[in-house]
Image (tube, rainbow, N blue to C red):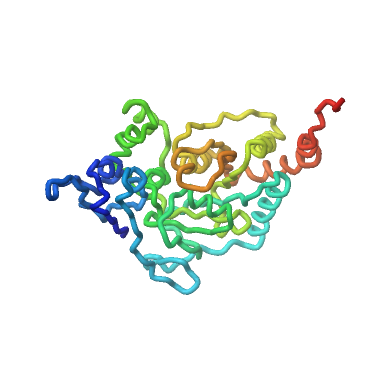
Length: 331
């Protein structure tokens, strides 16, 4: 359970920590003639650091204090579950490595595509490390593109919003009401906030027991979605590759809210269709994703055709475009 530290000398009693905490960990009380935040529900703290980010005087700090009981070769505790997910066959491993290599080579991606698996409640878990500190789902995707493999049950997630959307937990009241989005200045009115919440999908609470992200070439379970973090030009080629054999256009669902959990992951997961995302407030504020990058979620079922189309485009269309063949001669 996280430990919340308050520097009383720096605290100005503004109450923003109470206002912005999505799970109502704080209550303001009077102490010696001063209003100070009191931690009344420490067990509910997600370690999302929203209170830390809103504190104008830097008086708050959230410190992870839990320790996982390690098992040999594993990065975390398994809550007594002994059954492990069966390893991928050599054929499956070769397929995912091939997808990764073609995406990296043809598009000239800097970072690895990410294999995403949403593990249903009760399903066997793979032998993959859990993070030692809580992470937001978007942060885990950024880590996976750099080579990390992470298994994250609800207790490892630091964002109650994304964790709710992905079906790991119930939705906290302040998020369900839309109140928190108004406090952050993300929407004009409570009506707009409620509309945004009503339109975004979310899985049944506790229907998912863990998220798994790995570099695609190192997938340990069959991925549900492949996430690509890349530049707009590279995303253009992915779109063209996906329609290479059909010529069809796309209708993407994009809003700027809940980018990685909803737009990159859940829409492709539930619809079976490719979706793009421009990113969102949370993922851009809490990860190292660059301002020049955007995101695409590709259902695994769509990958074979997309890869074939991409390889075909890579023979002429992509190199010609990158060589700027339509530029007028310089005079």
